[in-house]
Length: 313
Image (cartoon, rainbow, N blue to C red; front, side, top):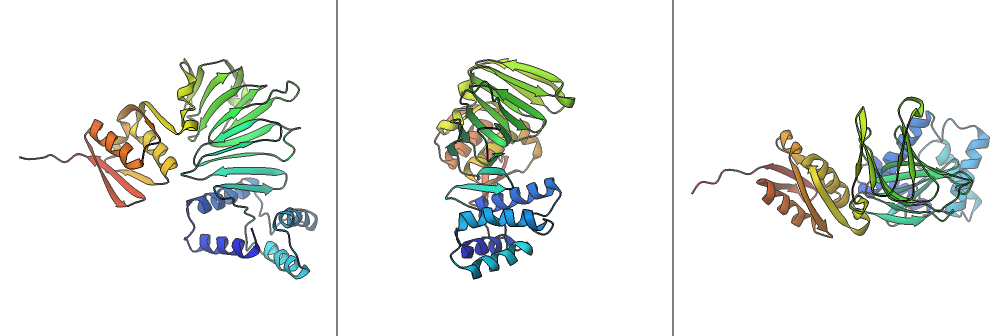
């Protein structure tokens, strides 16, 4: 990405004209800056600032000294964010960490340098060290399915909220869209989950076992076919007595739309079913038919669900 594209992205965001992928990328970047409690451009000492600039330089590949000086002034004044956008995925390097982002409406699959494979669901991010082979730690926001390359000497750890999942070599799914309502489902191998104050509680899961958290209550262990939990990797939406509120969140991520309910109590209704590579309109019509609801559009991206109006003959 050249300097003109970077400036264009920053201007679009400031003018509130950025698309969903661009907004998500910038929002996540700013949130990480706030979590660190520092401004990455203004408050860095010269050594760290030069280190950050070198990372940007490696990606942008400057050709002229004038361009380097120009961009150092930009960095010093915090005018442009360090964003490297692919067609559907952002790779962001801050200090020694890499963050991969799948925007709403997109799903991504990639392989880490230790041989592990990750399927990242819509509206999700993972962050991991550059030297991942030596330090196999990942922070997850959203949902991902992992196929972990075995390495007994270097356990694979995933942090999602206050929960840590530790594995040696296995496949499993973590849904951590909502803090306090995380779900871990194991497809193969053995997974150890720690949670609670100072990670004092531990649970071991094996194939077709799930661990679900409920906002402060004790987590529940269930046993069922774990393929349902990672069906999304095959573009299948599986609803199993799922609330309409949760269903709406799934559809918002998958189709990059906003869904509201005219009556908040409708969010508590539950629905079951499977939708494989269906258009959004087909899914919404099915839900409306089953639950006697109506679906209206303010515009193609804004949807309202309400109770069906009474019909008089």
